Amino acid sequence: MMALAVVAGCGGSPSGQNADQCNQFATSYDTLAAVISSGPVDGADAWDAAKRAELDTIRGLADSATDPVAGPLNTLVQGIPDDPLVLSEPDSESGRAFVDNAEAVAQACADDGTTISLVDFPLLSFTN
Image 1: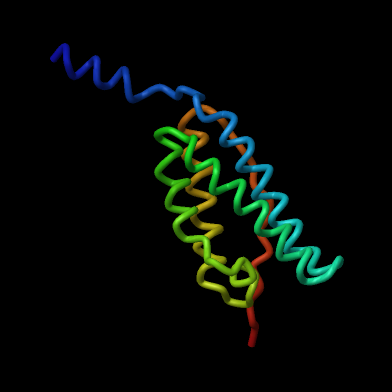
Image 2: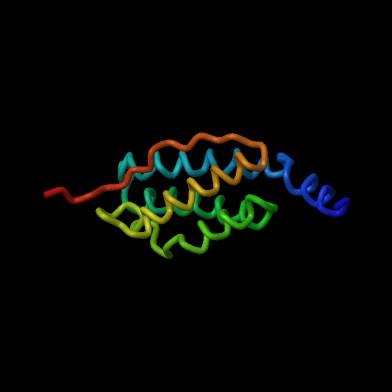
């Protein structure tokens, strides 16, 4: 019975040890959403480079995060397509997965003691 209480005490409370990673993730996610929303104002190459820069930042955060944030963040990173344009294509499955995985990261951050807010990601859809 004593061991059970120790295990419950160790795993049950938020540590906040991923606060920097969570806050940096939210900033990069929100910046990426803004870049995609703005479109290629400064040209397609600059637009692509800006998206890749934010995705590279997110990839780097996965290397430094710990549980419970590391798992969802790694899942998100593994789902990032090679071409970031795919994230913003109409009815993009990888775009939807990116948003769903980002929401899982935000929940993991909250579970770890850091609440973050994510802006609405610009998912385009064809309508009938």
